[in-house]
Length: 298
Image (cartoon, rainbow, N blue to C red; front, side, top):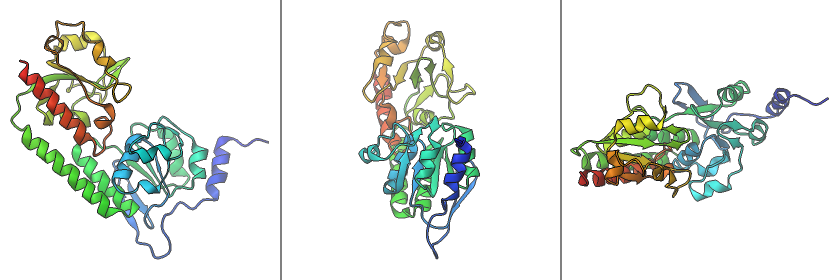
């Protein structure tokens, strides 16, 4: 008789040991972004990363060589492309994941299916829930992942470097005149972010004002008429790829909008600012340059 998926998973789990480290290893405990305590008996050696951003964070923390499985679109740094896949961030291949015998799973709180994460925990896997919302969270995540992987020196150096870059950008644009902007993260449906999102912290650092920042939802869906009525001075968008500017082209006919009339349609490569990783400093720096251009066109 064929076994159901839950029974197959239990059989796989029964043969695995989910604690990292060997005899005499130093216990490693951190608190994740969900307020949960995650404890390992020693440094994690077989890590599963359940979002492209998590994969990038682990590499930055010095633990890239510990990643045994990642999800689709985990493409940075280049070495991440060689990591075996365990499905997508929206649907994890549970049997494949368990067969990799992980001693730590790093999950994306708002992106991974809740029921699958609960199932992993029920099977005894240590699951770290990651959800960086502010620049300080990026630094903190690097340090915590470094602690779990035993790569503290690399992780702490990366966190310090990121904090230094952000601090320099804050100094540079501290007195910048406000620019009202619409930040587009998706095209169909049109989607943006509110002021609690990491991207909006970058907008504020650059002296920008998110015209939809006060909406309650983290990632609001909009109609085109709402954007036109907001009359932004600048429209900033990512795209389906790192060089795809077609979303901006869709706004060009609306010359009644200041952003269009003044030529303030700007592109930021999505992975440089939409993933909560140290590279967000690069995306924010480019965003600040765009807003400086918009100021000069008033």
